Image 1 (cartoon, one colour):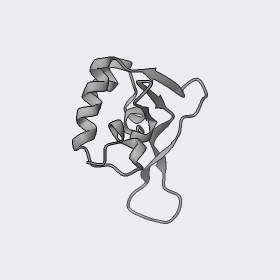
Image 2 (spheres, one colour):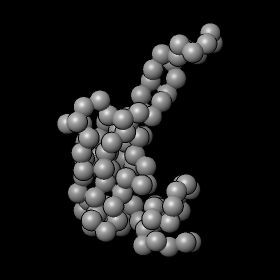
Image 3 (cartoon, helix red, strand yellow):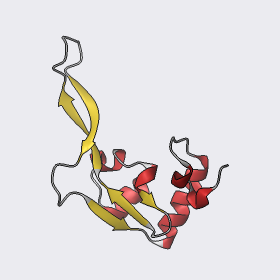
Image 4 (cartoon, helix red, strand yellow):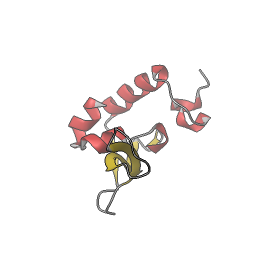
Length: 98
């Protein structure tokens, strides 16, 4: 994640909002559409005043598609093979089931 953040100048919340389904392995692109943000917790009295939520980016300009270099595709492929995740078969590099 740090490599992707540095390569594209992603904000911390944008990087934390990335998910495997945002990757298009064939086109070598990554869509940035969500971010993790801290919001006030107004649901019930609690010791915690804020909580983290994943939400869509505020502006259309913030939502973008990043074009990955071959080196980043290789790095993400290697990471995807060992990183636990949920999702469909299409979320896996090459559609592998292992």
